[in-house]
Image (cartoon, rainbow, N blue to C red; front, side):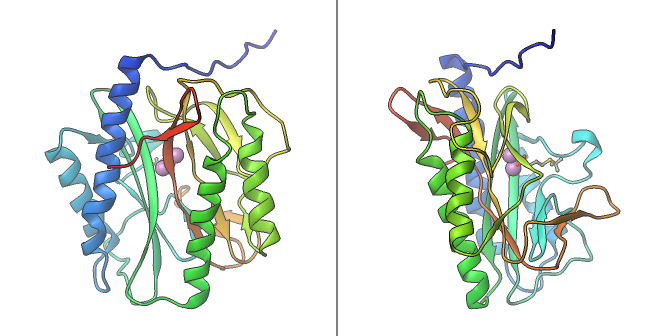
Length: 254
Ligand code: MF3
Ligand code: CO
Ligand code: CO
């Protein structure tokens, strides 16, 4: 018989460790904000993030993860996720980028990402970013003991699609904390009342990828970069979240 995948209920000690790592990841996103300007390369941003992580007692979980070559993921415009920072990619006015930081501190993982605007961006890009942020908030509202995991994606997709946006279907949110990616793995578009029950002490991300054109994706030849198939824009926000007795606590905050 197949083994039932195990969702870890974290101990208070593990929660403290994951909170510390998550706070460091959140502080990287705050630190990097003034550097996100026209003319900077995504590799420079990657280096600045890595130096800051090291100076603050952590290491990047990304580098070497299944062979991933950089310290952060930076995904611009039509890149949905896992964009590889590069010397050749120079930010320009009007771009939108997601910076995704996963740290390890004392063996514990924290995972968070947010969008940045490079100078002034178009109204449609502003609206897409707002939609991605709202979708994360809608997911958060579904986190409480006794609710089912699928309701996070059910509510996110309902909201996004009602407003003419698309939810990426291939990439999940995930348990996190003692490893980078743990059970459960759940889509951001999911059937109502599907999946397991949430229990206090579970820790996972919510990280909906929202596209403006269609939900379809394409994997580039570097085997990491995921783009929208039609070249339309994509946006994402991510937090690491603890299920508490009464609801949730966002761990990736300062
Ligand atoms: N941080 C991403 C996530 O939210 C995963 C990046 S994997 C990497 O799950 F190898 F590309 F870093
Ligand atoms: Co994640
Ligand atoms: Co992430």
